[in-house]
Image (cartoon, rainbow, N blue to C red; front, side):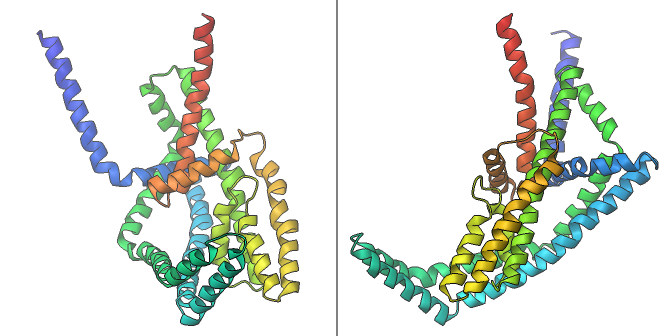
Length: 348
């Protein structure tokens, strides 16, 4: 084996080892860097507008301040309110009277269904006897999970610092980052540019056209629940954000049971008012906002968006709300290049 081959193998081995070591060292921050990339894409239009009047560095810094204001204030309010309402819900759910009423309701429902569905009485009676354990376990897990988030203060501060610094440099050095990736990309320069454009358009489409509207619908749901007397409105509003991603049903998964609850408990006026609020305000906001925020950008099927969000949360945790759609955006970008290549190969 000559000196040239030895040198090539040595460089390949050292490079591979250093790459593995780098990934291992930076592994704890990869999710944070991914989030920074997503939000840099979302807020890049603001940075580009500011760059018309300011140098790139100050424009990126002002954009970062805007992003912090848009993210920090709602998150602080939502986090503290969710923690408070989760504790209240835990206290209410674990009260003996509440559990006893729920158990009696299950037994009554089993008695009524037993004439039509044999075995319903035995099933609901057994469910009623286990309800106490289920309630304590579920409520305890929910409160404990929220409490864990708040308890990791030092780790949160560290990742927040990395997030802000990374987002700033993505905004400031975006063109240089793109050029660097193009240099190492195995694709042609044209294909790489098309891939980046597709990723940016798809990510913006998902974030602005779907998740942003889902957040708005969740906020409106919380407002409607607060206006018409449903307890823990912020908690239900947070649940409505995920419900809004369900194709064809949306926030009706949360609003409809609340309306039925108000009607069956004798609050007919509030029930009708919440139903009208849900149809006229929450239900129409999607049709009003989507053309405005989405424009001509690439649209993604709602089912794929829902699966990407849920799958992202399952794989990455809470940041998966944004990282799941980013992964789907990259995949769709690659597929958009792959399909024309396959057609050209088959024609040849």
